[in-house]
Structures are given as structure tokens and as C-alpha cells.
Length: 346
Image 1 (tube, one colour):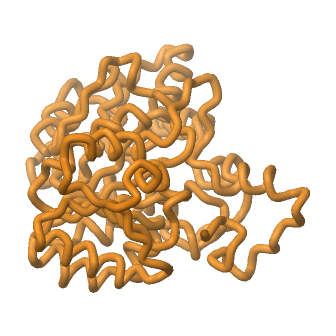
Image 2: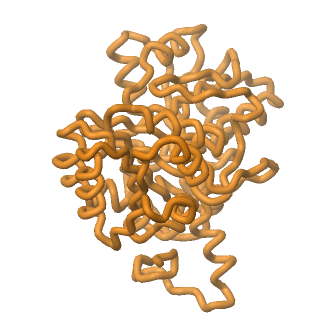
């Protein structure tokens, strides 16, 4: 079994001594901080097990990363429907395509960097071009690991957005991961879904949120700023909105978990309301992700509003502890609130 201290650990990161491993792994590979929030363990794995109770077409495949994509929960429940493909992402995607052709609904898991970079052509030719119902579910999206560029999938949304037939999702939390897993099982085509694994925060539960494929939904209203966000950045935007409210700045949060197809109608309608500053927020490179998708939608629909992006820079990122990296690269709540204040004062 491959883990964060295996040979998939990048060579430029010193391997921690045994006594250090727990703390270092927690700091460098945890999904994200969730201080003050309840968490749910392995929501993807448990949702897949639940689906499989009534659907014998559901199968799970992984590239030697079942424990680190929560697919081990499914493997334990349905060992005869679990396939361990080894460290071979091209084989993983090709096998998933073959199973889809035979009437199965394969869920293929690995790390986001390995799916988007190593297996790209196999996904295009074997899955996307044939419009097969393979669900590619990938852990460590964006800056959710401190192991450096070899493991940080900061451009995966851009890569997958450019692929015809591919639906692209970036869920916020445990609630949405559970709901989205069930929804994509019914979707007739291929899906790429980012995965928060392990103990995942419950962010949207208190809002009575229901995931709908292809739909963006307002989580909270506000008159000065409109955040349009995806993934765990919706959690950060909600926290930033609460902090900014104390300073008399009213912020709305529009959560857009489906990056492709983008809900242009809702986004443009909300952006056109009342002269608010529109701020997109994503755990992805500033190039090619949610921000540019929203900017394109606004331009095509002639919605002219002040627009800013919270995103990762177009560069290879440092290794280190996640809280420090999120502060360094502007994904922390403190960074978001400070930048919004500056933008409003421009």
C-alpha cells in the first residue's frame, strides 16, 4: 500500500523519522483545516458502499491508493467488485473504460496529479471521446498537500475543463461529496470529481443544501460583495463573509461546485444584481479554472461588473505545512478578508 511516506513521496522532501511521521503527515497532507466544524469520515467511500447495495453495476478501481482516496471502505464491503491496478494510471483508466463498455459504472480513484497529468491521453481516447460513464474521483486537488509540485494538482480543473464530454466537479464538504457521488453515478457520461478525503468538514449541512449537477446555489446573501466559489474555498468564503460583516461589509456567497458545465445563467443573473464586487475563489491556479470560466461567462453575456480573483499563482508552489502555504498563497480567511477590503477601497 502506498502512502505519503512511500516512494511516491517527492525526492526533494526529506523523509521524516518515525517519531515525526504523525505530526508531519497531519500538517502536510491533511485535506484542510476545519476548526470549529464537525467532520464526517470518508463520505465518498461510504456513499459508494450505499450505492452498491442496490446497484450491482458499481465497481471501484484504484492505482494503489485505496486508503488515500477512501476507496478502502468500498473494498472492504465489496471485495469482489474492487480492483487494485497498481501504480499504473494509464492501465487504471483503460481498464475502467473497458468495464464501462461492458455495462459497469466504474469509479476510478487516484491522486489528482496522476489522473490529470500522467493519464490524460488515456482519459481522452478511452473515456471522453467514447463518452463512457467512468467516474474519475481524485484526492489531493490543488493545494491540499504540502508535498510540493509533484503532488499539488494546481492545474487539474484547467486540464479537465478542456476535455470534450467531461463533467468537472469541485465539491465543498462531506455533505456535498456524499450527494455528488450519488448524482454522478446516474450521469450517463464521464465525470472528473475532486475529492476531500479522510475526516471531511460538514460545512453546508446547516444551510439545508442539496447538490444538483450543473447548478450554482446561493448559500448566503449580501449587498457589497459576491463571492463565487467552489471546493473548500466556499467554506473559506463563508468564514470571510462572517468576518467582513463585523466591519460592515455585506457579502453573498454563491457556491458553484460544477465547473463544467458552468451554470452561466445563475452566475450572470447574480453578478448583474446591484453593482457588487464579484470575487471568484478557488483552490486552483489563476489560469484556466473557475475564475476564468466565470470571467468568460460574464464577458459572453455582457455583464460588466468589477471582478477579482482569489486563486493560486501561475507557478510551481512550495512544499511545507498547509496552514502556512494557504496563508502564503492567499487562500486563508485572513488573506481573503484583507484583499477584499483593499479591492473595495481601490
